[in-house]
Length: 214
Image 1: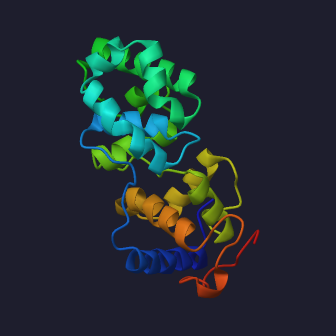
Image 2 (image 1 turned 90 degrees about the vertical axis):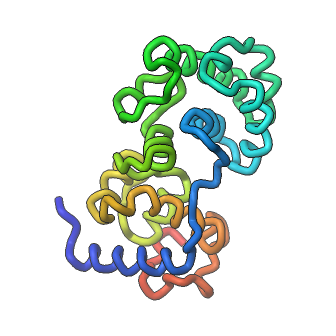
């Protein structure tokens, strides 16, 4: 079902305000290559971006390419990423992912959702992060906890499943803004729309937000 004109209009107005409020919104993970962003995004699962950014400089220096990441020992990698949590599973995923990049993609990060999705540790969210921010390809919208929560509070969707939230958002938001909108919502979630204590009184979009679930 297509969104109503009223909802489309409200979404457009919300997006405009968020763009003006957060003109510098961008990916919070530090990276200089698609591989670095892929690694950082895998590490960011159940972990803050700040913590990942503390860990990755040494990791990127130790493993500057996929071949190096594939050949590092499980024990050494676990030690390097220990503070990001779930370090054993993440280390296995990173090594397996890197091995696939070497075997199937000449060590390069692929540029399609299908190919990325086949890599260990890469779900749709991670693939969208890499495609949108490393390659500037809008294949979908990144839905993390901030994006999901704010989308529901703003009345843009009632869904909790990230895939359904993404499906609702791509019908409301122009494709050119698919990568940016997640950064805008994340920025707003951190500054105003906190999970436990949202600052509704000072919110820039309070006149447009139904505050569902607040």
